[in-house]
Length: 541
Image (cartoon, rainbow, N blue to C red; front, side, top):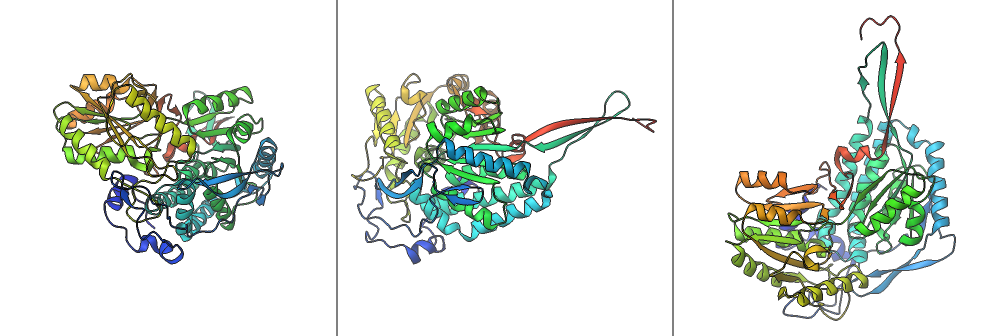
């Protein structure tokens, strides 16, 4: 299964009818008594009550520690939900501090005494490749499980995210035997070399919006470098991480190298962040939680931390833009994944010469957006992840209305069941409004008007975030000016959400610390050691 870019694949797949092959598992195992009635334009129909039964069974609900699926020490479980209905899917072992302790002990033993860091890098590479092959074999099941637990469209999970997961592990498998130090010239009679060593036990905390992709971003480089891992899943979406962890052991990963604990942030997450025997911490989530994670890491053993946090990305439509193409790309930049994307283009700045045309077409595109059961063909938008996020988004919508932004469309829940929200567009948004400043993390597009480049650069940078930005222009000079002026970790020119395995991702300012993906991500999981040896009667220096 070839991996492709999010943007190019999704823009094709969501605009066209799905192929029969991509829904082979759904066709053979799933059933729908709704006869397609849950696919609707949001403005013309209520959400359907009859939903597709997900074509996958849940086999893994316990924590994975030292190669075994085990109950929580406390015996407690917590429910995980179907966001289409709010109904319980399964009960998951609820890990807490004692489970983290056991997982860290297993990871420490696997690192200090086990075969993983002592294998040749080529052997580690082969295990990563076998794992990628197993993911491909089970990709239909994993896509269905991801959609069921997260609410994202099945087509997105199956055609974009699973291929990207596979590609990421191929990429890191390729790096495993290419990690090496340097020979360094020094003044005097010395031979100097550097060694790049695995950092040890890595603690990793992943979010709920892209469970499988974030699993790959974290686990891939850590394993390629020879580390062992304790990973905490998001409590909203534990199912796919447990499934793929089982596949890792089928691929030959030794026990204790990868441990998975599901649980809540204040208990399991805090225990992992503050653990004295964790050598490295990586976290993806909100900026507020990232601050807590960083503090816990500092107050314990001063472990190094990488953070991929929130964003409020500008999407700038210049005066020379092809308006129809700009509308479609801006729509994708914001509404992709129900707006639950840290780099979403949530501040759409449009030049005054094309603003009015853009606004009318953006509103029409939002009205055409297909909302419904994410398992159904043609659906572009499923539910928000849970009741908390659902209510948060609706509060921001009410705030926009109360702040006198113009509600162009949407603005309310979609249907009467689950956590669906109408695609919403605001115009006349001012920079000091909450909907302009805060990360909403939902299907709410805010459209602003600007006059010139100096103005839009100043306004686009006037945020505590700096994760990404989008620029839509035909003018190379304009693109170059904005590329260098915008303070963000990723700038997409005439594209958006291009997530290749080799492209680094991370933020400026309060959007995080460090980079994920690409060669830069390897630096997060390596120590650099200098080795200096005296030379006697050296023939050359």
